[in-house]
Amino acid sequence: MKNTKQREVILGVIDKMKREKLHYKVEDVYLYLKSQGYSINLSTIYRNFNDFVEKGLLLKFILSDGTAVFDANVFEHAHFKCLKCGKIEDLSFKNMGINFKKETLESKGYNLKNISVLVEGLCSDCFKKN
Ligand SMILES: [Zn+2]
Ligand SMILES: [Zn+2]
Image (cartoon, rainbow, N blue to C red; front, side, top):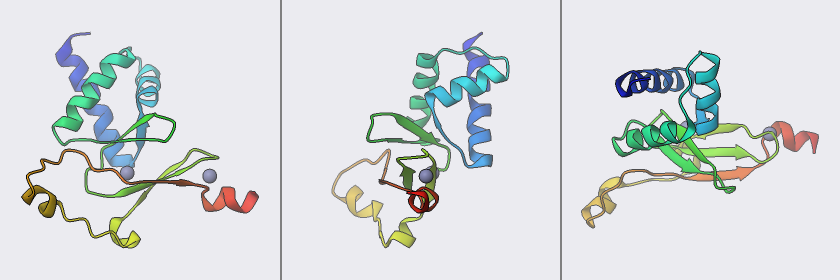
């Protein structure tokens, strides 16, 4: 597959992630593309996704097991990951009482590209079953 075609296919995935509020690991992207009849290897997906993080089109966060997760919702928010069923949910900074001031850090000379706050534990379903 040509690079331009690859980009197009990958942009399609990002669009789907945005519409369906999905949080995808590189493996999830790979399996989804495979199900659609595209074969793009994991390192190519990873490289392209990281490019989009650089451009501000995607957020990336790292789970405690080291796995990178990508998110097309680039509006600042936090994540909850259930350690039992693995589901990932969005949490708003506002509801968590986090008042994040990008400008304050930028005024100190930082150039921010990627902000991630991750909370891990049991979701309410898994906690009830425990
Ligand atoms: Zn759970
Ligand atoms: Zn998210």
